[in-house]
Length: 274
Image (cartoon, rainbow, N blue to C red):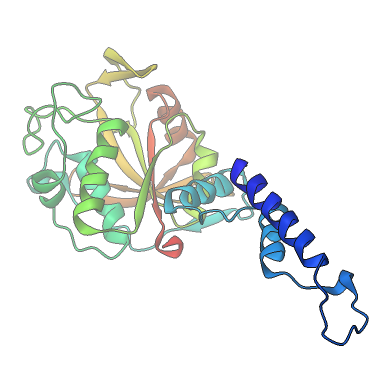
């Protein structure tokens, strides 16, 4: 601001000096109001025009897209995201349901990932089931699982290495109906449930960043990619056994989702924002 005031004072001085000089050699009449001073005009624009702002970043545009989807009205009763194919756990990834659900979602976006790729190259491991996978996902009785915080780190590992135009959101706490909006927008959803859709028996829990994450021996993760409101059904790519992609009862699915704690992750395509 001090710089602008100094420049304005300089302009006033120059203007005053200009008024004292006869603008024409022959004494012709001169209209002072029409005199053009480039420096004065530039300073006027500097003061009156709003400063230029940086264009929004990809993160800002992505958040705006997420907010727009979530706040929108669901204007359809039926939708399915195509090309979401499950990979079976019993083919060598007996306790790797989270990695296989993610693989199904990523392959929808055009990747060609096999059953071991996420586990071997991107999955984050740790000593708790919230921020890192506990155990060995290859063997059923040696592996435990991982929740959305750790899965987000895993997904970012994949995005960074592959320069993928994708963005994950931890949508924990959202109602199932709200997740339908993301499916309608082409975003597959990882959902924490039980492998047989039975009631979960909570054995323990851990609080992380204010959220309680339960552990139950039927912990399971699937990829939700379709809904049919009139028939009260959802379409789920499930890696249990040798993998299946079926329509199932939405009310039952929602009950388990709610009872477990409403844990989910949305994977959004942001290629249109780059």
